[in-house]
Image 1: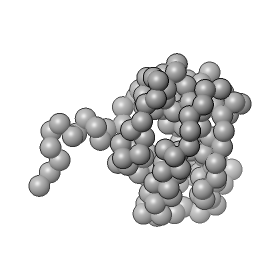
Image 2 (image 1 turned 30 degrees about the vertical axis):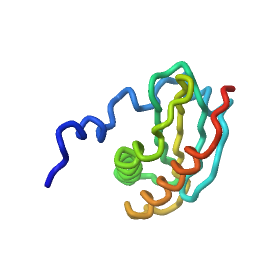
Image 3 (image 1 turned 180 degrees about the vertical axis):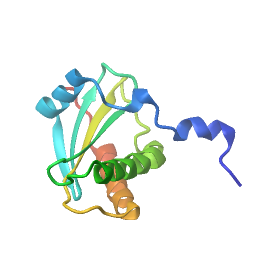
Image 4 (image 1 turned 135 degrees about the vertical axis):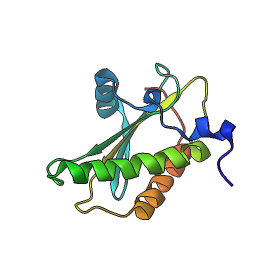
Length: 134
């Protein structure tokens, strides 16, 4: 009872799905809209410059001094996104994609189930928002 081979590609989190361009990150934070769903502050922007949705996960060094803790939170958020993105972000209107930045703002490390439920809630909200080009 494993995952079918054709579905394995859809569950990965390739490099092209990661928001790592300094120029695009600056654009998201300057021109993007934001929503708040604890434990995330989410910045997003629709774009025609990129192919597919791109995601950035940020955890504050000020709140989590140890890199081990920051990496644990980032791994949990990325895994929750990887497993649930296809259910909600399946739209592509007029060749538009979303650039999404998840900023983890909680002061404690939450368990995976809590993070996943809040991430699913955020994906539902992003999916219901109309996409307007800036």
